[in-house]
Image (cartoon, rainbow, N blue to C red; front, side, top):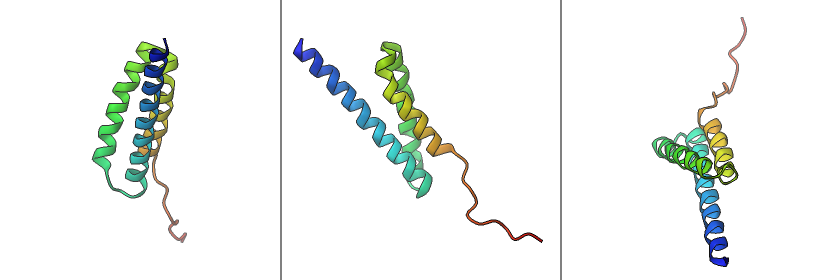
Length: 88
């Protein structure tokens, strides 16, 4: 029984670490303009993992669903203009 707990704990830890990596790459792609393709591939992999985890058990898929929403929001949220054009 203890080995099952260890396996599930390691699966959750791997899921959280992968989600954190996706969020970091989405932030780098958004704010630095680098690793855009890598962030997009990682987002697709996170979608596949999230669908699988939610299919297995909704509580197991919740962390990756939150990370998916956060990283997709960071990646695709419209950018603000830095300065406004002068009014005439």
